[in-house]
Each structure stands twice: as structure tokens, then as C-alpha cells.
Length: 164
Image (cartoon, rainbow, N blue to C red; front, side, top):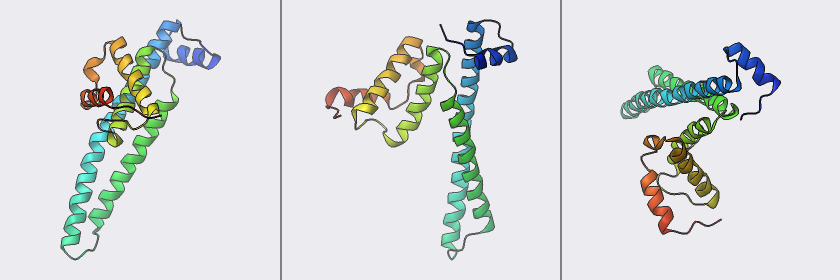
């Protein structure tokens, strides 16, 4: 059972929760909403970066001067990154109320980790985290949400020794 603090009880009352189970469900729903928002930023950031890149390339081809449109597109992409960072901080600082909430957080970790480590990890600390993530996917029934690189990562981890 989740240990409720005074602050948690105030949040629970504010959210309309009457029991620890209600609070846990509300807390994990709030976490899930933040994670969905974090993912929506990914799409918006990619679109903004594509626009900025196209304008910057066009500017280089026409003499190297950055246009006002290119500057604005770069500023939009940067603002989206900053906003996503604020959402990430909320996710990181919001305690998961259940094992399901912890699994949601590790799904976001995997997505972010895949940017640097698409199909392998170079240290034991990364491998232990990956292993816990896979365990939580299995235990919560969220296997369908595995990252596309997970299968390759598992094959590599079984084949190679991970140094500490």
C-alpha cells in the first residue's frame, strides 16, 4: 500500500479521492497525462526542427544569411524543447503511486535512452535499468509498449558481457 503523507491527503481531497486506492489511481492518471504530453512534444519538436533545417539549408544555398523565418523557426524549436523539459521535470518529480506508474516512467526513460543507446548499453548501470524496465513491462502487462529497439538490445545483452 502507498504511504500517504499529509500533502498526499490534501492532493487526494482536492482530486476528489476518498481512499488511498483512489489517490493512487488519480496520481497514476496524472502521470499518464504528463507522459502523453511529453510524447506530443516529440512530434511538435520534430516538425519545428524540420522546418528550421529546411530554412537554414535554403539560407546557406542563397548566400549564407539567416532569414527572419529561419530565426523564428529555430526559436520555436527551442521553445518546444524547453516546454518539454518542464514536462519531463514534472514527470521525474512526481512519485509513481503504483507499479504501473513506475512502468510508465521507465517507458519514457527507454524512449529517451534510445536516443543515445539505440540497441545496446555500455555499462552495468544502464543494463540494470533496462532489465528493471523489461521486468516492469512484463509484470504490468505493458509489453505492447516496448521500444522498437528492445529486441535488438536483448540479443546484444545476451551475447556480450556488460562491464561495470
